[in-house]
Length: 175
Image (cartoon, rainbow, N blue to C red; front, side):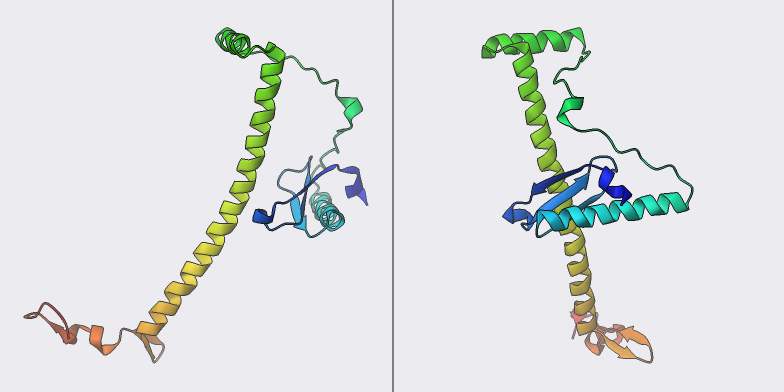
């Protein structure tokens, strides 16, 4: 399978998230699968990647190149250009905290990554909840409408107690 060349990120889901495991592609955005076991998540995710690669090939589209994410490919160092004012603020904060500028920046990066991961999980859950809530509210609304309406010759009409000739203008309401 071509998809086996594409690295995956696999992590456990919390009980709040339904449990199980989540596998996502590092090279193809939006490809992620949850399953009961890590092996199932990996297998299912690789199948989705294979389907995407086949579809792209059929359409004559370029195939994304698998990345090299081995630890040997990274030195743990990179150069970052930032505005002088931010450099100053970070330096002052590091001094205030009694840590090196490097340590402070690394800590901020880790905190940002953790927050981003939590936000992504919340977004997935929120989207899932909104879809479920919308579906449920639509079903409840239809159920309610059907319960207060009658069906005659292909038309839904309000029950007689809600029709215009039942409106008593003197009493200001339906009777």
